[in-house]
Image: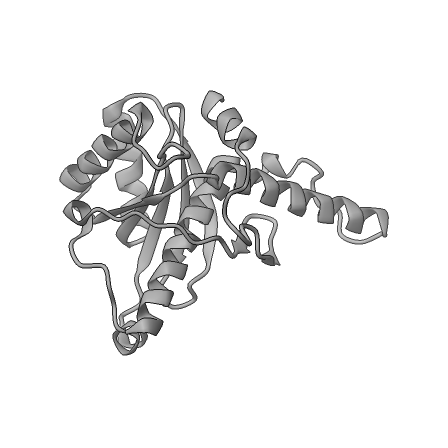
Length: 215
């Protein structure tokens, strides 16, 4: 809770941090995100993909991870639609159980790559939480065998909260106009952790597309 409160208190430092909600679903959201990145080669190897190679690439699923001490938010995207959607949240129990549940989801969805948020301080330096996340990423790679890439996740929980509030506001507005009867408390269907994972994942996809355009 402290990590989320800290993120929400942070000022927005990135221009056009919130672009748009492209689609709204009862169980998922497609979204655009802002652009920041940090990707250590020791987790992923080569990252750049030429645009023609991207177009020919076999469809593969990517799992987004928002790391936390109490919960791990998860999101899913594929290289064909390039849409990120919140998937689920793992309530943490212990290392072995957490890894077992994550491994099950990786196998169930045929995940070929994992993109995980790196919780840097606002000034870009690493603190205790970032070091924990890096150690977790290393365990995922060693125990599950799926490549992990880490990206800067500053402001993602703030962005996820804002996105949820926007969606909730639309549902309430539609209900007042006699439209669809969606649940007023959207958090009951979609956790902020999973939405934060979707923001992290969409940022990664945006960066890959920008890299491909420059190739």
